[in-house]
Length: 451
Image 1 (cartoon, one colour):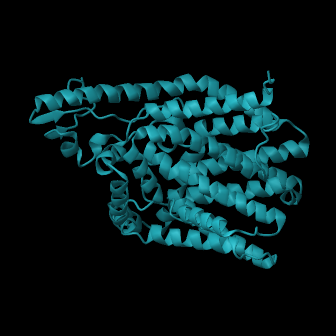
Image 2 (tube, helix red, strand yellow):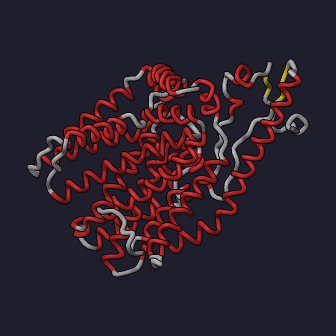
């Protein structure tokens, strides 16, 4: 009988545990308003594509919506299969970005790094409910962050080797498709990717590194995707929102300081890791008289930190209040910068920092998971109970249906709060729920809120 390899067993157990965690919470999280009604609009693949193009001209041109619609057309079961795999692959891709090579599964050398990143990817990003477990949010935010990570991996490889790879035709096509998806992903990822690739091409020109065909293909893919995203009629209709007009009429001082409260809130939601990381890095930079920048890990900390700040600043500058789900890529990049810095300190001062932080993250995840679970179980049970109630109302067919809506649920920490967008908030609720006039009672009226 062949002996079981202990190292592979540990990796397999960790992968299974993480995937199962993502699966369970993805299952518990109900359809949001968009997904509930998309299931009626997307009965098949053709309907999914038609619905996306309608949204492209009227509301949301992000390519993640097309992926969302295709999944909806096949049922939520497809999301429950794909999401754990995508989140696992995302963590492994971030490991590759940080190490410069893939994780070594034949040993446990990279195991602490995986534990640290797996825990941080759930409990440290802003509002994981809206970016990891909600179908629409995952497609638009955490899934769309994957091509951004591989974009950075590709650039790191060119920077360290001093040359661009020779591509076959099929590789060039795949590279263009990936860059195009990145360009059409969302407002902050797309702009950041375009600026980064433009600056990197200038760097390659100075260093006399050929940019054709790889970097040229990436530039064209990102640029075309970016143009299609921002030139979409749906983007212009979004820009007609009253809040945009309010922002345009604000004073220059108000516009300049608009970012600060949101960035401050984001930093607090991440347990102040961004400012603490920045202070530690600046102290190290001054103590080494700027010599720390010669170290790749420290240089990558600086690049990833500034990238995270830029990603956050783009969204913080948008005149939309109380919506932080789109800060996923910014918080994820700050996690990346944090790990780059502790990797630098670990090698510079010979300290087992990644192992220490991995244990801390594991213990924190173990303690907080029961409290984290309560809100998801409650939301799931409320949604199921209300579905039964709605079915009874359909049978009775009353002239007016009084239905309580599902409000936001406080989590164990500030960033873990559930911000659920209820299906009852949609304008189409009466027609697609098969009821007459729907009234959402005041949540303070206890009599009307009893199901």
